[in-house]
Length: 68
Image (cartoon, rainbow, N blue to C red):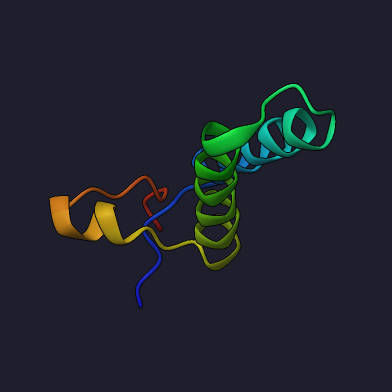
């Protein structure tokens, strides 16, 4: 897999995942919405750690910086 996520994109995804986890464990979000958002947070976290987003690959997007 070729990396297709830049540092800014990864940072934003990790922050969103942390916020969602905080809302979940603080019992601010509950039920089906909480489960759905936790799945999204897990996907954001995994894609950030491996620097690859399958949806970016499908749509031909790349947020990595250009290497000189």
